[in-house]
Length: 321
Image (tube, rainbow, N blue to C red):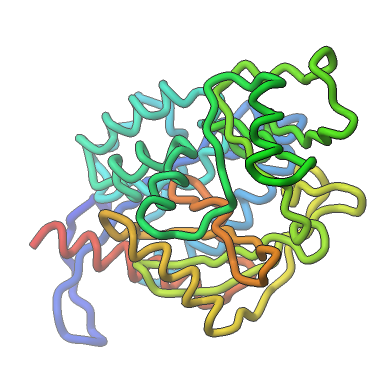
């Protein structure tokens, strides 16, 4: 029986190596035994998960390491028996954010968690955008409001000098609870319900004309990029709304713009997806910085699974020195 920390002899490099056990955290919408993947968006999320895990597992298996799928809320699994817990397809966390954060705090006390709990906590509320703006990062212009009112929207419309606004939940994902507001036709009586704290941003036309450019990084090193494109007539790029992704070859200045975002973080994350959109001037604005459970699109980069495996190994080794 192979257990975490068992030593073997690597005949290729003539040094001992350690079998590493990694818990890949997922949810009931994505885990093969999860009840949530039997219907609705779980059907699509489950397929994504299966593709991701099959690609990520290959370099682990080639090195003799073990990657197990574990539901993040399954407290019966002894995570202290794992060397690493890697936040994966936990794509329901935003609906149970307090429970999720409590669980991640507990996991971080049992094993090495990636990304770190402090990173997850900070990244769980989109207020981080304002934090980064204060450090010099160019973001999509953003106003934070605890409760959206018509007066707040009128003030934002005047401030941003636009009549087209987007309202997003401060804690949310996949454009859930998001609204596109056209102030020339909107009135107070028909304002959609937005009970949660929100962000108000100007609508950026490039999201429809070009798409959202995503940059994937591993340990601060650029890995690959993709363009997320909305369905015709929509502006939401997620697959939930029939958006799709295509590989994208960024220019060196574009990669530098994305890399600069990471330079403003307090600590370097193991993995990151930086979502950017082209501003009216042609430069890139940060749309979102995904450090919790982003889809990292390993299917679009054959080298990515090996890069992630190597990063997990080296980070684990550094922690145990």
